[in-house]
Amino acid sequence: MPSNSTKVVGGAVLLLIGAALILGTGLQQIPLPAIAGSVAALLLAAGSVLLGTSEGGQPV
Image (tube, rainbow, N blue to C red):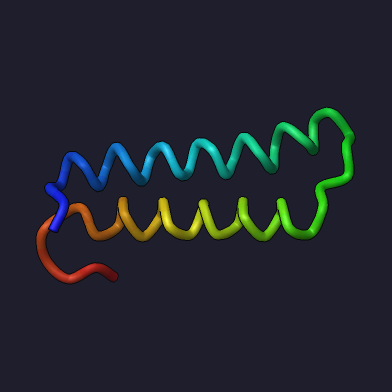
């Protein structure tokens, strides 16, 4: 099982990539294809899960 710091760094990287994909295309007024939007949403979800489970105890 990965350590807490590995989960935090990995989760932050996934969140940053997903947010950059969505916000970058939105700010440039480029339509985001459905596949890219789906991948970005999955990256945001995976990053949130990693950050949420990085601490001890039961995640909410």
